[in-house]
Length: 135
Image (cartoon, rainbow, N blue to C red; front, side):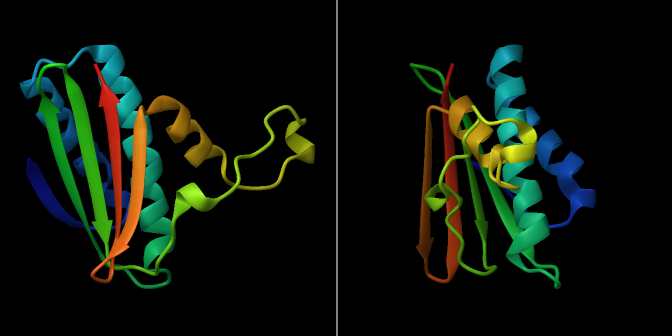
């Protein structure tokens, strides 16, 4: 599994996406699958950049592995920011008009719908979130 450690800032989003795309391209990943994984990666990394260390800046570790039979992409994120399980948040009621909905939560909701599996744990002082998508 390839890994990078990077400052969790919005300016580094393109670097994170390029890293994940490089792993997926090397494994022969389909474009549709890459686009779905990229959307989820963007949502998770932006959340880490905005909230994990605020107002400070800390590091995030991003791991990516693609391949196998059946084909799957696994992307893991780890940070030492404040503990937060985004999966514990109640899904927004998307049947309501935008004006009636609670603010926030739509990105994680979308990520849950895009990925086949998402797992969160807080271990050894780290938030660890793992995304899985089958190809």
